[in-house]
Picture (cartoon, rainbow over the protein chains, first blue to last red):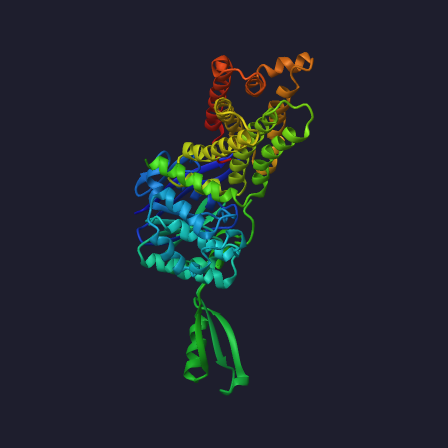
Length: 291
Length: 237
């Protein structure tokens, strides 16, 4: 596995930022670390990238401890931080060329990725005149020009409009197809559901659940179905929608009767969203501030 | 070789960035303007001595202000984070930023020397003195940049230091004993002394070794302090 976090603990004074967080990301996977602001997502990333030291536990990239070996390990990692930390007075091209020179890599990938994110015609534009979505794409290109094996993104779509977020999602899925392992943090459940192979719910510094989104939904399903049926004659005016509990013995009888009488229009299982599961586990909404 | 390429990358980036940074461009122009005013409009000014005012302003204000702003801006805009995550080592970041300031100071001091029509020998002494004193100033500027969380606070942190290093040497010798006492601990006092001795008394470089040694020693001490503060504080707050 390319990323392993094992029993990570970190406190800032009396505040516990991480309390025994563990997860693994296999090669080629997209792993989503979910949680509200202050849950510990950014602290986890900062420890993984050697910017902070954990109080205890391990953060491994490529099976190696990060702290003290950042220089060697981070050459194979691309990082998209939460802030759009680009040089605003420089053009897109100047920003990317600067990092190309630092990483000693070729020019080709700059144009390749700018083309991919539809910014090739804007490369002579100064960063300060770009929209937030465009800046986010430049950050992504900057993180990719040295051909990283791992891409770490901290809240990549925070503050983006739906169209820009959607375009970024497509790019991330393409990168996954190209074999790049991706760790992203987010408090957007739909985004994570759409992109991630595995997710971990962080709440107040603890990983309260982790697994494949589909498994989490099954595990935390409350066995309800929505039934649309005709109360009397099969005319549209008689259509009724009812939510039924599957583990109630009466539900089976009721549905069987509807089928027998040909009065059923549709049955849909009510699958919880990741947001529902998060609320169920923590009693809190993702929009809440953690601290 | 790799380190040199990264330093060069930082140097080129800073040069590109400064071209659209009006704050710093104004700061670069001021020593030239001051020299012109002092040389042409101040009565009874010995020929060529106008350069002294421009040069001391250049060394103190440009030498300290520019690196402090470059470092504080990286911190304020959080670009330092991604720089620290790149293969660039902190020492390369410091050298790249310092080198740009150093080169521009030497170029501007040459312009000033040519403006006031100095001979080659005098120019050589002034360039050596300017280079040595600007190292001191750049290291102080880097310390100010490291201590300051943002560009605005470089003024609060740096201004008392800038004024001390700029004004005290100029006020020494007017009969205030406290000022004279403090001035003797400042490398800028010895720098101004070199400028006076060179521009007015036309002394030879061999008479200035003590001055050069004091400035070089001060630069070494402040460099050690820079390293100490970096180890204590780092570039990321």
